[in-house]
Length: 376
Image (cartoon, rainbow, N blue to C red; front, side, top):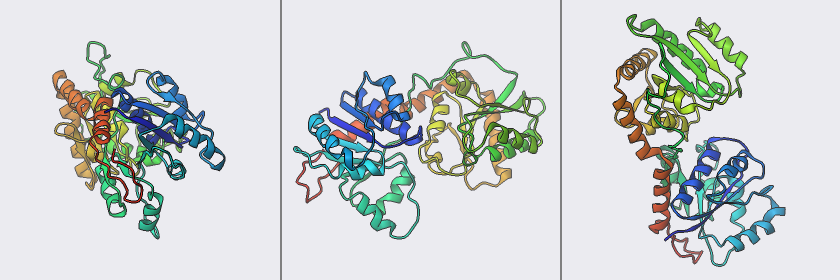
């Protein structure tokens, strides 16, 4: 049975949580559910959602504050949702004030790690006292939340658009005399650009001379690191800018082509990565990944997907990177296509939609005793 599902998202940035919210709306709508999306007006979530608004109803809101409470209550009556999914704290608290008839189930997506602090158990319970179900993007986060939750906590990984992120074969991709190691993501120290340069310097030193030369490629937009900052890091590492290392400091249109042509996708992040979008995008393009293992990065790996260098020494990490880069450069195209197909089974929007739809239709959420609601 298809559902009427209302998604509320207070995220102000084009973050991984915004990505997860949009992907969930698109995935559930593609499964035949009636979806309504309420992001903050003119936020990145709103602007991006307009590109897909033919697939679902878009109803942005200016804020989630006391003045908007009557507006949201009226919207709840008009939409009459079976399920409300919230993606942040403000809207979770906000929707807890709505008493709809018939009642709806309240699902909280939690995409941020549980930070240590005083009264963490009590704060988590209080924040989710009106919540029937918590969904996370990773098993690691699910495990962290379970001891602090009275409601079920379920993992559903992010799904990516496999029509955009797909294997580009040699017939359409331009060849190269270099083997590329690609780091994709905003320029920010937490994304591990400094660590990538250190790894690449060591890898270049050990690289077999009979192989095609290596090149490290950074693609992203400046954030907490400017392009000049990143260039300074390259020069300080003793590498040649424009030769050993190239920097593309803008969004690129041929993203699948770039990801497909890379020898390996390097994700050297030092923090964050609860939602592992970039790792999934590389794998959907058939390119193996080497991941630092922070957050949930290791959870994207399957047999033949690549490696994690979590808790490894620099020597062991470089050896892993050497092995996988050489392996990837020697692979037949059929092996890369097979990797892309296996990734599609796990990380496509269709896979995400099936997981959400199954969750919401198999009556997995039990009613809170005091609510009198029926199960989903």
